[in-house]
Length: 276
Image 1 (cartoon, one colour):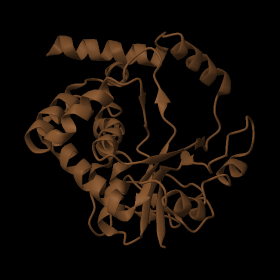
Image 2 (cartoon, rainbow, N blue to C red; image 1 turned 135 degrees about the horizontal axis):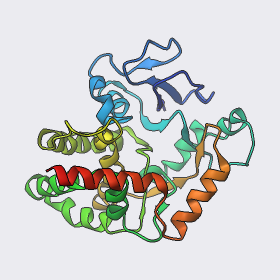
Image 3 (cartoon, helix red, strand yellow; image 1 turned 60 degrees about the vertical axis):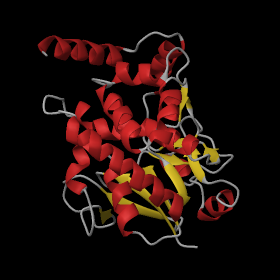
């Protein structure tokens, strides 16, 4: 079976050595010879600033004939079922723990989709976290209205997911092509509706990534509604991290205390609401 797992990035990076992986360059930077660009054939590459890695998902959906398709990031990949990150190990060592094509094929014999391990919010809901971390939850109001009109069977699970305390984030998934393509068709239709109605002209560059952020919570809506089975794999981070800072912020979150960056986003959100 032909497998194409897109590893998405906007700058030079190493792709796992397994032949299942395909490096895809997004954004408007100079060509990186070792990577395939998402601005060829049928594409939405010009929307990368607001759609993030989803421009690569769109490219894979429209242009790949692989039997198995997937999406991971240059900084975050899915590891083999028993893989785990070891503090201070080299990035190369960690990259070599990427789930292999043979393992992917085996998992998809008994599951419909492969996802990263779910994120637990502890002290808040998925929607609460989204509204605290980003500029506005307005996008989900538009999504709900559209689902009521065009995809009513998804409405109940949208509410379930937004009120849940755990989510499969990061826009990472691997599936057989029929599943991947069906999800992509639904996702880009829904996001296109939001794009047509949500004014992001006053958003900061980070906030303009809104469609990439919204989609992180839509995968669970789609999986639940279609009664799909899924396997979870560990997420491996492929950049050097500031571990003391990471553990400090993680501790704050577990205690239900908002981290400083989120406080700044909340202030900005307040200021924008006052201007309306």
